[in-house]
Image: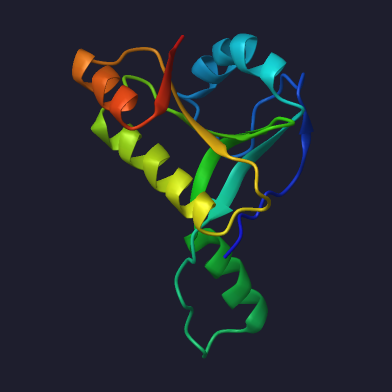
Length: 145
């Protein structure tokens, strides 16, 4: 199932991304200083994965809406001319955050929108040394802001 990108936002957009957690917003706005110059446009709350099969007894409209909600959601995706940036934003990032960004990248790459490669980013304010080393090993850029 290909990613559902949704609404496009310009690279210089400074608003509050849809469905981004309130605790993530300050980190996101600080990260934009470094990330915005890299991208041509943004997508937020990007659905990936196959989601869950919905019961037949509910209406088609309800089934479609629930199915979309059951898919995993990437906080932000940046599009560049040569790559896709898969971005997880998480205060005090731990192993769970690494798991999220790794899973999102894997689901994206299963059925990508085009042949451009992906680059995974974890945006955080704090991370332990073990988290940094794990990001290096997993080819995830840790962006501490």
